Image 1: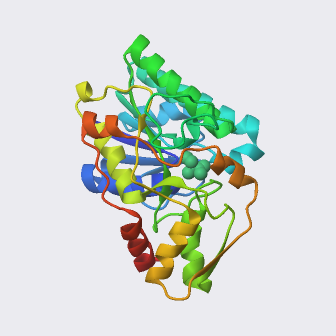
Image 2 (image 1 turned 180 degrees about the horizontal axis):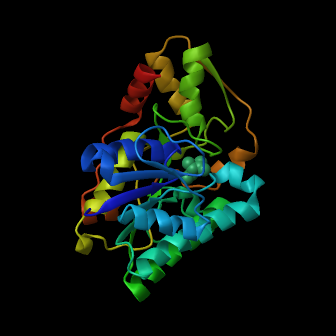
Length: 307
Ligand code: SER
C-alpha cells in the first residue's frame, strides 16, 4: 500500500487489532483511526460517523488518505434489532467510501464481507466461492448487496476495492459485540472466570471460525497483493478451521480441567443454522497465497494462555 491509511470502525473487534498491526507495519503517523465514539485509544484518532460524507471527506483531505479500511457494521444479531439503521449504515457508509475512489480521491478500499452472505439453501459443506446465496438476516443481505456493488464499481469505474468473507473471528485482545459467532470468544472469558459456559447456540452448531491474527494478516495481505492477483472482485471466501460449540468445549476441557458447558439456544441459533459449516477458499489460496496458521487446538491454547 502506498499513501496514508484510514480505518473506519477502528474501535471494533477487527479494527482495534488491525490498526495496531497497520501502525506497526506502516508507521504510527500514517494510520488514522476513526470511529463513532468520542475517544480513541491512542495514536491519531478522529470521531467520525461514516454516514456524514462531508466529515469523511475532511478527514481524507486533512491526512491525504489513499487507502480506506471500512469496517463499519452492526453485527448479525444486533442488526436484527435495528433493521433500518443496520441497512443504512452498511449501504450508505459503503457508498460514501466507494464514491471517494470513483472520484479519484482515494486509491484502494478494503471492505469486509462475511459468511452471513450465505443462507439456508447454500451448500453447507465446503461452500464454494460461487454458489446459491440467499441470506436471510439484514446483516447478510447488506453484505451480499455490498459485494455486488464492489464488483459493479470495479467493472464500471475501475475502483480497486478488495474484500474477504470473514468467518467467525476469535481473539483475546478485543471483544466482539452483537454477533452470532461471539460465543466462541465469550466461552474463554467464562472458562477463566467460572470454568463453565452457557452457550446460546446448540451443541452441534458447526461454523467456520478463525483466529484474529490470521484474519488480520489476510486483510493486510489482500491489500498488498499485486492488482492482477485479485481476480474475485465481489469478495473472497476465506477459511481456517470449523467447529461446533461441543467440539470447542471438548478442546477446552482437554486443556483446562473440569470445564463444563450447557446449552440455552436463543434467536442467534437460527442465524447460525442458516450459515455454512465449512468454506472452500481455494481461490484466495491460489490467487494471493492465503494460508491459515491456527487450527482449533492452537486457537484454544492461544486463547487460554492470554485471557
Ligand atoms: N461474526 C459475524 C456475526 O456473527 C458474522 O460475520 O455476526
